[in-house]
Image 1: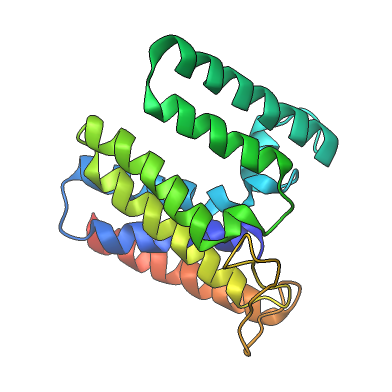
Image 2 (image 1 turned 90 degrees about the vertical axis):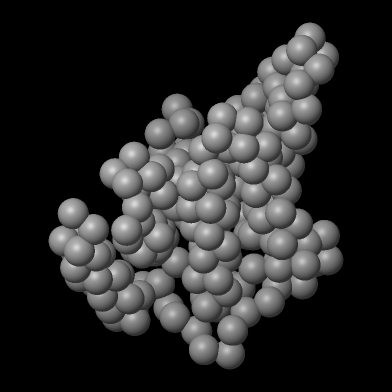
Amino acid sequence: MTGKTHIAIGTTVGLILSIGQPMETQIMLVLSSVIGSLMPDLDHPKAKLNQKLLIFKNKIYSTIFYLSLSFGFRYLFLHTDNIVYKLLGILTLLIGISTHRSFTHSLLGLFFVAYIVKIIAYKYNLYPVFLGFTIGYALHLLADFFTIKGIKLFFPLAFNVSSPIILNPNKMYENLVFNLLCIYSVYLLLKVI
């Protein structure tokens, strides 16, 4: 799936979770679900989030960038003994060395990243961030499950898993899904406000 469809999925689920919530919670839910829905593609140098993070959009620079981040987080861990820095160091290392749709598109990746977000969210009493992020991330995996390439759901096992029903990202099916999600998001936005 394309980045715009993942954003539409994250926005829609964030708005659904926001119904009946205070405005502050609504904002946290929508933003965290959108970020969660984009997070699994950090292993691809041209992904939506990497377009903002990386100066050069190629695998070599992406690997150097994430390995440098990993080194920085591990350095912070050694000087602060904060477990979050250690986990972020491991995460950025794995993002830097993994291929697209492997670690970050697996159940292991989902649980590992969700665990880090949970630690941070609960430390600062931001429970909606954990909820929105985790659901956005999980829905990204589900959406990519419906593509022809599938995902390495059971990483480190090397086989891809995909749905028998395939949505081709360059065809009308994904555009239809995107447009329906946008229309539904506008409806939800009007309902939430």
